[in-house]
Length: 112
Image (cartoon, rainbow, N blue to C red; front, side, top):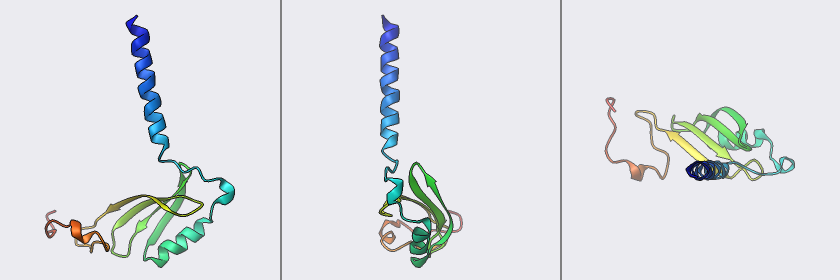
């Protein structure tokens, strides 16, 4: 009797994890996608040095460096080019992008 209950609980947990993970995906119809070059031009116009743009989970994933020299990875909805996710790795000694300066607690040193 315990085995079916354990199996059902494990199955429910797995399905919940899969459904929750799927929310990060983009579901724009391919016919509505804007060209990658449109995203590349917009990023370069904002100061990015774009290293690559690929499709991941139905989203455009762009990698490069921002105008401040920080490594950036961002996901965009391919039809609207709306930002879905942003990862920023602040380089030592780099300037923080506008709006992030308020999060600085103390000055960084080379030891950080």
